[in-house]
Length: 167
Ligand SMILES: O=C(O)C[C@@H](Cc1ccccc1)[C@H](O)SCc1ccccc1
Ligand SMILES: [Zn+2]
Image (cartoon, rainbow, N blue to C red; front, side, top):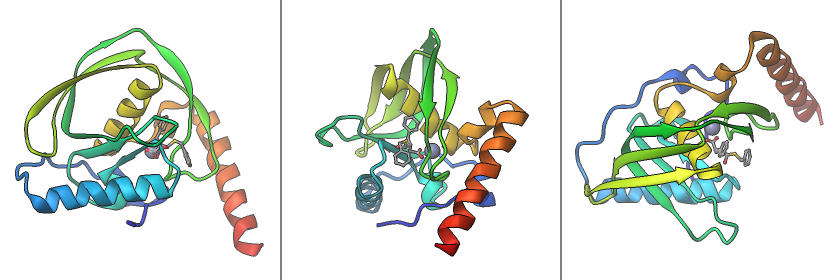
């Protein structure tokens, strides 16, 4: 299980580097990412969140937790439409906010063996992929909010943290 960085950790602002070597070590890292995501009840996780600055993201939106998707060096090659989705983030425990993102995305990526794949996603999976790709670019979901909304949410997160600390 890897440690997930929590905002405002500045390392969350790091831009991830492309993966160039597709070896057993990468496979082990991807397995560790899935283990960490499942343990945290997340539906997605970006390498940036575990302080590894390589373009790796994992996701599993299925209820049975049996549809793992690992995208390496993902790039959005087409996007379409718009949707509002109430997002959470493992790096911002306890806060959720509506974010508008593309409804559909077509993504070119590598699988863990280095083969090129194209994934078309829409709805929640499209939201998740865009959310994780933001992480890999050093962006976090509150960056999409108005300054007022962002400050209200971050104040509430701080309050929850203080309460949890004193509890
Ligand atoms: O922090 C992450 O990137 C994981 C997100 C992925 C996600 C965010 C927004 C929309 C779809 C997926 C979390 O899995 S969101 C759900 C969540 C949040 C906090 C704690 C547990 C689960
Ligand atoms: Zn997140």
